[in-house]
Image (cartoon, rainbow, N blue to C red; front, side):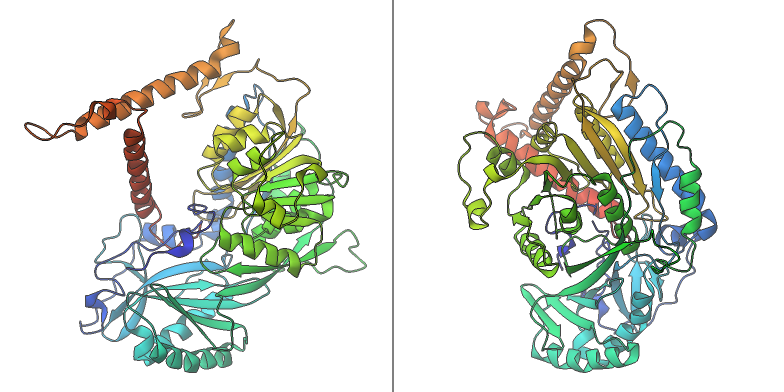
Length: 573
């Protein structure tokens, strides 16, 4: 079985980064997929299944987007403890079709014919939805889908033990098709792929098309002259805008409505001309590595960068710290607004990629260090130990005046150490793909920071998911006199008297006690019955290393099972 490397790097999401196909015993790479069985009659898909996975309900787009905005407003407003209704956020809509540059399909071979298949939450593993096109993917992917299908059917080496096909496109750059296999690929695959990629380039008229074959510990790329890295080059055009300024109570939903209506315009970006001098675009170049996280909706990604540039304008005398920088998406764009930028990323592949993107854009004021959030927090403490990974990049923290921090974490949100670090900065730019985890972290940061700007980006149309961006500014004095919000259920609970001072601590202590009790009960349930070996007494202690290890393993297993259940389909998060 092929391990989906899309969950590598920084993002198990946002993914929460990427939805993958649910594995199937009758699926592409299994023993029953070699084309020996008779072709099955294609079933008529259910309307709800099509709406969940494939179709673009353009007439319902506005109502779906409005529901997302309301949900985001509810989470953010309650988390910040605002007694007045939250002002309407800035809303950045998506194109209504052909908006995704990344998409994955499982494959079946039925009677010698290759089928792209998808699974809804209610699909039977033996009866998936067969598709021939995907309106949510961009036009280049839809054009390439039947051509890749044709070449796989024509070459036995390409279709043998084929499990999955992934497409990774760009707005103004290259495109690749990745073929994942349940068995090894070798010289016969390379020869067939050379012939196939030549035909693909001729038929599409696109000389950037790449064909990649991947099996366990093996990756081959056609044409052979290409380097051994499965990547595409992207060019983003980001509109420069003025600082949107603080939220105002009289900002109503009209701006959001105007933005939604403008999304139906046939032009992605109106060209700059003397008649429209206010439209200025910043052109940015990125390398995107297949299997590592990148924003799947390029058009909305450009709007996210534009908003972040506006929210951080006027900071040219200070420096920026970015955590979870990935491939340098934000750091590269925001470098023009700051004196220096220090970006941190824990993945080796993404760290190297971010450095390549910095060089690609000719930036000299951006440094990328391979550090996680805890290491960054430790390095910033007075008298901290020396980190060789900082010295190797000639990063000397005493030379930085870090006033603003930008975080773009996975769906799980910020670690506790990252939240504590954010609380020490004058300004916080928080980009999140999960309003719930965003609300949990804002609930902690509201004591030290106030909300200045709020935006909703429709990164994932026709789903329940959306991207949010907030700008927080540090208060002159910490504030505690607002309603206490549960970080779990976000249920408002007003406290009185001295409870205002320790409401958060009391709530946290109660949750900690409940978790300890639950872990102890789970441990009791795992003990053997009757005459079996008894667990050592020290293992009854929920704080012992053995219990902590078991709890961590169970949590990881539960998370994997949840991803398999919820991430069934083709939507990239």
